[in-house]
Image (tube, rainbow, N blue to C red):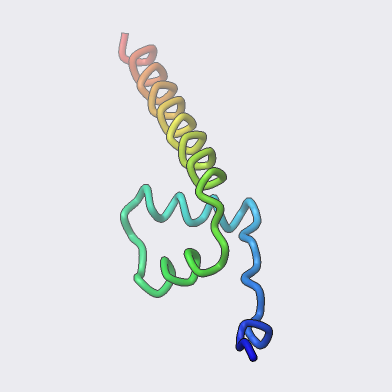
Length: 75
């Protein structure tokens, strides 16, 4: 008999958990146990890439906005 029936199915990460994972990854401050828990938690690679690209684009937009704000006040 197979032991697969006794193991619980991994739950999928919701959007906020995926965003938290990407945020910690972008900062580079991630514990190994947290990473292992997220990976074993059923992360979909396509969703991870989409969230990472969106977070990176938002970060760039915020940096450009801050730079424009300082430049406009400096002149």
